[in-house]
Length: 511
Ligand code: NAD
Image 1 (cartoon, rainbow, N blue to C red):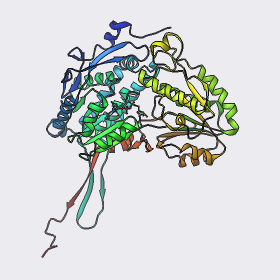
Image 2: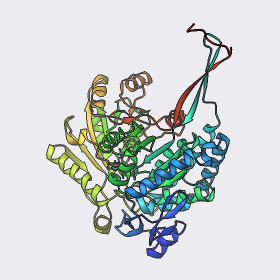
Image 3: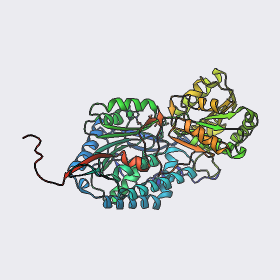
Image 4: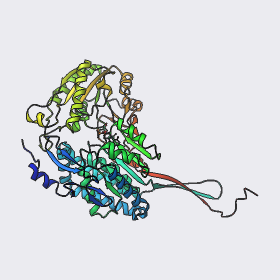
């Protein structure tokens, strides 16, 4: 196996040499300072491709979360950031984007080491993260207000202002990219941030903090606090000093964050799970549909909120498409993300691997047909790493657990439909509404179906490509609010109306 993996402890230490340490572990970034957890807590990070311990990081507690929140609060209400203008913030975001580009090779290798996904995916993610900062750098200085022609001698205008302290809680499937989606619009709009990376994948966010330090971001504007979700994440969601909480993660966690946020009625945005339908009509371009069906579910080993995890195939095409799909899925090369031959990496953790495997068992018990996969790969790969082979179920029924629940792994369930109406009914038949795709050569039919799809992100004759320019988010239990694009910027602002009396004299309302 050809590999660029950093060799052993020395190679890993070399890759991570730009991270700061404190108390024998990689440190958190709070109030412009690097430090250990208040109680000295640490956590070991594991390479999901081989089970090796790759790093020890600070594991914060409630006290660390509170310190970070206080720092962000002081930075917003007392620090120079509150007086910053859009041009200053734009300049900062552009420079940050350049730093990510300059260090893209280091960052993508760090991400592959920590998350396991193939280098070609992490390289793409780093470029996307840089572009996200660049996009919001550009947006910061663009017009955002309104004026109205109103009766009486009044001038009425609407301005957008930052919300204040933003708590931002992110998952492990796109560690740096999710940090960019949160920090870029928040900073562009002038907020201060407390970012909590997923406990399993904090390394690239810590490296990002070193860039903030080099760019002399005022202290407390961005704080990176590490720790468990129910401890540090909950403290952020519940804090009366946090004005907004933005969360990306599971729907169950989203519910608990929403509850925790009620104390001070903080603004919330939730980007949650999905069980997205990818609908293939008989008149679709066959090879394109097969190709994107595979990409839709097996990219990032299916650990994508918008994964096309349900493939809806029209009856007359089903028996032709399924064998082709299975044949190609079996050829996907599963392996270490550093191996240039690898096409699909590991599952993030042993615990998550076991959860995915429990779903595979449930599918078999429910009577679906396991067409391929369902196993760990043979040999060392399967023993040491958290791999599952690309898995496809056919002969499913709409009520099955594997059809209804988000598996968040490389497991595709195939459903059949007879006509447009049945495709739409099946597509909408889950609690989720994040994404969906349609493959057909009939453009009018494609649009009819998309219109009926209760989902926030949709594709025609493609699956997965999305852009910083367009809003991201879900219908139904896939979330609340939108990230990215101008919608994502607006979600980090308060709206204020200003009415100016142009005839300054008493109104005479009360004689
Ligand atoms: P998760 O909900 O377990 O964790 C996400 C984050 O929330 C982590 O940082 C975690 O530490 C924190 N957290 C956990 N419990 C918490 C609590 N009680 N209070 C506050 N914070 C808490 O999700 P995950 O397993 O890391 O990620 C997978 C999920 O994320 C999937 O459901 C996936 O669909 C979803 N996701 C959604 C999007 C989207 O944009 N809609 C993007 C990526 C991932």
